Every structure is written in structure tokens, then in C-alpha cells.
Length: 222
Ligand code: SAH
Ligand code: DHB
Ligand code: MG
Picture (tube, rainbow, N blue to C red):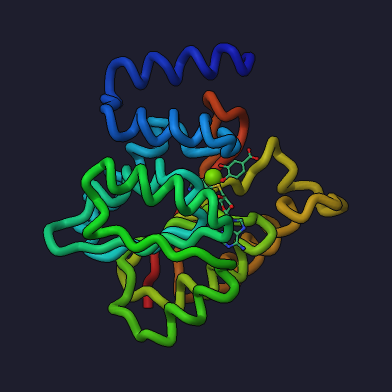
């Protein structure tokens, strides 16, 4: 099995099931043109996020790590009428690219792009006492995923979904001696989830155009 094959299969899935459109294409194209790293979720992953948000009839979504707004567009399109999405991005240049893409997608009224380090913008957001978020997508700096999970739990309600991207990283997650902060972050996330009675969680390994990785899905119970 090769990366080439995983990519070809992703193309098959996309050709059959995952329709693209001008706004999604534009988000990827402008992101590449502006020099953003090509690390957005794949189309099939974006659609999975969209389907999960629709399945729970999400009205409020929080995203950590906007990049150029590709996953943001998939998620925002899932919102029920009157819904809203807040997305946090540390890099002002990336946030600007995302804002332009979100506007071009016709979603600027429902998406709030907040620029700044999530370690600062999360407490600011919490201080506003927002309605609980129905879905949280954690996809920023991976070393902080456990801290972001704790924030996500505080900002959610029973029934909320908390999804964390990039938790496998070529299997590095099982290396207890790793010196990769991302892998250690994922290990810490799994320890936290294993001990947290208020959620029920699982992790799914994935292969595809972005290689071998995975995501964690946690359902908030109480
Ligand atoms: N969700 C995007 C990809 C996000 S890539 C998509 O799938 O389309 C990770 C993003 O997190 C990058 O844009 C990076 O700038 C941002 N990031 C990294 N550290 C951060 C922090 N401390 N606070 C907020 N954003 C951060
Ligand atoms: C990478 C991939 C991601 O999905 C992400 O959110 C951040 C980084 C990467 O492959 O480096
Ligand atoms: Mg990611």
C-alpha cells in the first residue's frame, strides 16, 4: 500500500461522493497562492465534518485552527438556519486569506474569524459566556490539543461533539519516548480522554491523500 494508492482512492471517493464547488476550490487555490501550507482537511474529511455537524443539527460550531478557511466552509455550510461558527487562527495573514474565502463562499454573516493565539482567544471567548457549542473542531497546534480539549469541554453541553484532527501522525502517537511535541500532545490527549468520565471517545486511524493520520471523536455525556 502506497501513498500514491491512498491518494488515488481518495480521488475515487471524491469523484463519486464529494462534490466540490467554486468556493471550496477557491479556498484551496488562494491558500496555495498566498503560501499557506497545504494541510487543510481533504475533501472527504471536510465532508465528514459537514455530515457530523448536520447529523447533530449543529447550530453553534467552534473551530481551532482556521488556516485558509477550507474546513471552516465545510462546517459552516452544515449549520442550521440562524447558526453561527467561531474560528480561531493565530496567524493574521492566514486569517485574512480565510476571511476572504469565507466571504466569497457567502458565509461571512455566520462565520466569525478571530485572530490571535487560541490560548488567549479561548479565555476571551469563554468570558463572553457564549451559548454552548454543539460541535468543536480542534485543529490548531497539536501540542496544545489536550488544553484545547479542556476548553472545548467547558464550552460545550451534553450531546456536543468534540473532534480533534491529526492525532496519529504516522503512528508517532504510540512512541512514549518521542520528542515530537505533536505526538506528545496526542498522547496526553488520549490519557486525558481515557480518564474523563464526562465524555465517551474513540480514535480512528486514516490513510489518504494526506498520508497516515487519524482523528478523535468525543461525545460529551454530562
Ligand atoms: N482547519 C484547517 C487547517 C488548520 S492547520 C483546515 O483543515 O482547513 C492549523 C492551523 O492552526 C494553522 O493555520 C496555524 O496557524 C493555526 N495555529 C497554530 N497554533 C495556533 C494557536 N496557538 N492558536 C490559534 N491557531 C493556531
Ligand atoms: C498538518 C496536518 C494537519 O491536518 C494540520 O492540521 C496541521 C499540520 C501536517 O501535516 O503537518
Ligand atoms: Mg488538521
